[in-house]
Image 1 (cartoon, rainbow, N blue to C red):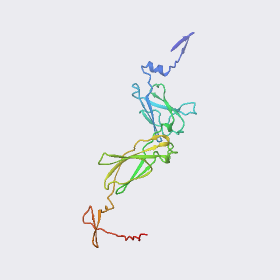
Image 2: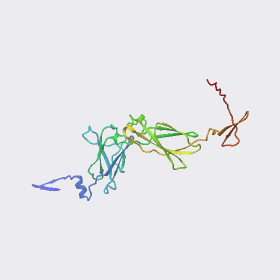
Image 3: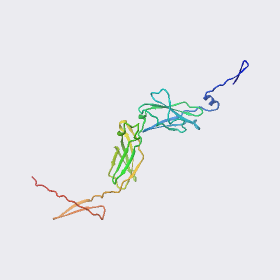
Image 4: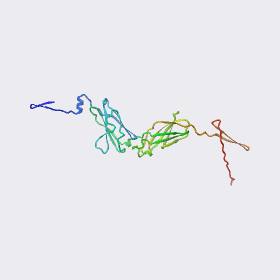
Length: 271
């Protein structure tokens, strides 16, 4: 802008706010992201949100967080200038028993207004993830070894690792009939199974003291081994003919040999 004052010419520079420039250029104000959700599973903190219809193209998203003792908002690590609608902020060191606040905005040539997320306490929000499961097969049994959810250095369940209980669902791979077994611990043996048969199972964890029940983990399948013990004879019968004693029995397989033992019993004279 050129202004003439008393014969002198003065150049005046006028700075316009970004939203004025955007509007002058035909731009639109960005709308805030919508439906922001926080998922906490074990020690994993995940944010998900929906972009508005206007926030397409080269729009990015950024989060701030605030702890109870803070007056200012701080940039949330792992959730800055995101082009997707999901971010992970598990690296942030938090007191899981303290409340935390989050806010998000969309960014392009201009920015949307901040959208604040409902404050939450991580431990109360946390869900129990699936436990680690290791199986060992026997001929008529499966031994299950279960490791608590989270990692060995888990912060979320640091005080509760020994308090987890587990439940499982087991079924024959060839059948849809399921059996549920409740309140088992980190080592459990399921007996009376069929040899050389594939069984599948899934396990979930629970913290009854905190009223938290987890989700079932992935399905694990294992085949029981070949039977390592022959079945016992059946229908055993003793036939007495005069001084002859004949022992008879039935057996499943042919061409087998048997060994019989006897034990002498002494009956005392009645008094």
